Structures are given as structure tokens and as C-alpha cells.
Length: 106
Image 1 (tube, rainbow, N blue to C red):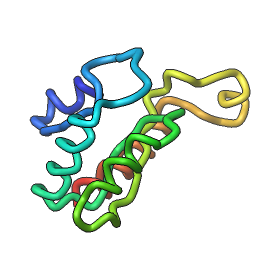
Image 2 (image 1 turned 180 degrees about the vertical axis):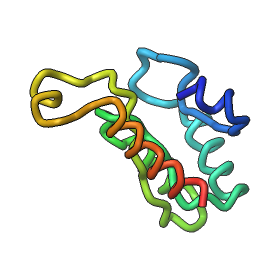
Image 3 (image 1 turned 180 degrees about the horizontal axis):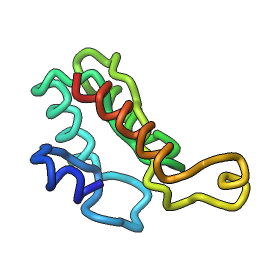
Image 4 (image 1 turned 120 degrees about the horizontal axis):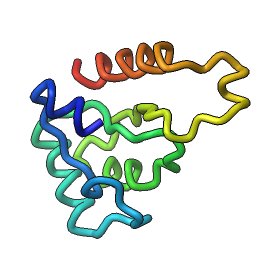
């Protein structure tokens, strides 16, 4: 999603740089992200598929309002044969991601 943000000039803040093997964000990172959510008046925090949402929930718990939604984007990195047989495809997934982005940006 980094390319998407760069291509469309979207500002973003992330718990990890690139594809990190880390499983926990630092205290400083969580506080920084929570302050950004407050500062920008954001109504949601984005995660990717297969995220357990723990970092997003922790960020939200450290905001002033504590009522932001967690929205999930799908990078298609974990698609398996069962998903494909169930009808999952690139265009459908990107259409779902567009809906998520529209909600996040409103």
C-alpha cells in the first residue's frame, strides 16, 4: 500500500517501516500514532489482512476519544486456493479496498 499512498499523495503513519518482522510496536510508536489520530481527527485506523488488530486497538485506547473504527485493507499476500475457489479475485478485492479507503478518508 506504500505505492498507493505515494502515487496519490496520501500521508500515512505506520507502526513499522516497510515489511517488518517485528510483532510489537514500541511504546513511543504507539503514543506517536495515537497523537496523530487525535491531531488529525481521524475516525479510523487501518490494518492489513491477517492482522490481529492488537496494535490498532492499543493506538485507539491511547487516543482522547477512544472510538475510532478499525478498518482492514487486503494486500492479497495471503490468498490461498480455498479463497480463489470461493470467488476471491484481484478486482473484487481492490473494489473492497476502495470502499475501505473511501470510509477511512471521509
